Image (cartoon, rainbow, N blue to C red; front, side, top):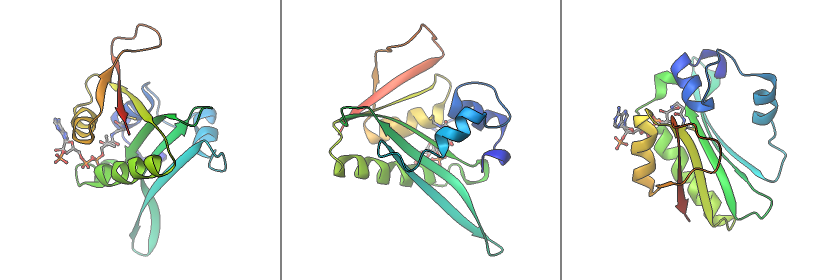
Length: 142
Ligand SMILES: CC(C)(COP(=O)(O)OP(=O)(O)OC[C@H]1O[C@@H](n2cnc3c(N)ncnc32)[C@H](O)[C@@H]1OP(=O)(O)O)[C@@H](O)C(=O)NCCC(=O)NCCS
């Protein structure tokens, strides 16, 4: 999926300009046997070929109570409700596992995730790293 994402979608997901996944990103995405990582993948079949078209994940901190969330939907599937569906299931799974809070970083121009975040009850939070004013943080109490 990542190899076909537009530059804009890659930027909004990873908060930096890059055409492809870095090795570190790829290792992070594949850290699925780690108990701290919960990853939901949306798969679509086209001409009998299945391919990932979206992913939402959270990574819990060592307390198991707080987690950072991130999501991406491939360009041709955006604005068709897939991100909402993934977030619904991600939040439900986080609650089921007993997480207390979830937060996410996003680009200040990212209208789609701002809208989605508001829909799910995320509220703007104070930032706890650097002074990059183009990156915002929002969090939700589960
Ligand atoms: C953010 C993202 C995951 C959302 O996925 P999606 O499948 O497009 O989400 P949905 O279709 O469920 O919902 C998008 C919502 O944003 C709204 N939206 C889209 N563009 C918008 C804009 N410019 N201004 C306001 N709202 C906008 C849509 O109307 C929709 O709202 P609705 O459900 O009330 O109709 C997807 O856009 C994406 O992958 N973006 C790049 C990566 C990213 O930004 N990740 C988040 C940071 S980790």
